Length: 324
Image (cartoon, rainbow, N blue to C red; front, side, top):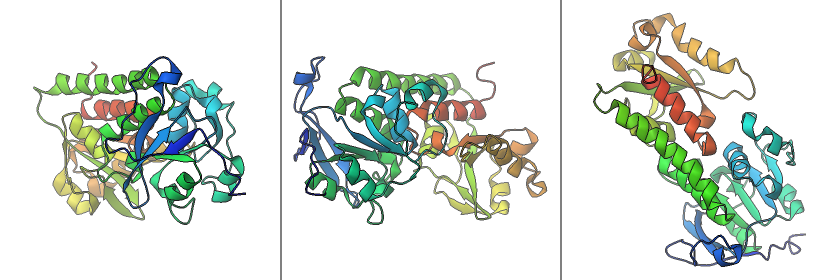
């Protein structure tokens, strides 16, 4: 079965700059070959070259699926898996045409059976216990792309999310659509930053309750980078667990509580109430001023096209009077 894998449309090449060998053109023949830099499980850069757009894609996890849908590539998806939330409403019609499987993290055997020419997913999928390192697939002429903020890059940043979208635009020769999505992210970020540059700097914390502990997202997380790009001061920038006493001492102007809904609409309200209804935290300014907000994990961790939703959620929580 392994020997039967064929994906002759793509090949691997070493390219120091990791850039396209040809200038982008509306003519698909002149657009290719395109070389993109991705990573292996050792976090080492790996250059892959596409001689044409992939035709049989395995897309795993929320951002992988939704970004392809946003780029109008639903007909390229052979199988999809791993949704944490329902797809955004505007893409539900397109998603209805996709073969979504119940296996949340597809096994190597499942993927091999599909004979894909491209696998789009997270760093964790390419571990030994899942699909194995990317070398296995590249040796069988199957290209891969690993979301930068899934663990491939050391720092999780807003720029990485934009880079993923732009890279997929290059891979599939839909750069205009990719640029449009990235421009929307840039426009909103710049709009907020310019609107509040003369205001008093707001302090904030992004927290998540994990096993009874209060985990804080630091400056090197995507959420932390987002709020800093929006002009706020992220408290406890090193991240990690803190106590309720630590939280009280930090006393941020606003708090964002992370949740994963798994289609449970009540999770957002429950996340807020975890803080608002905690009598031990009643002295917090964020509680007194009702500035405890919820944010879906998918909006601030490998967020893909939901990056703009994360920017809006953070902007509205940091600056509640911004649009009034």
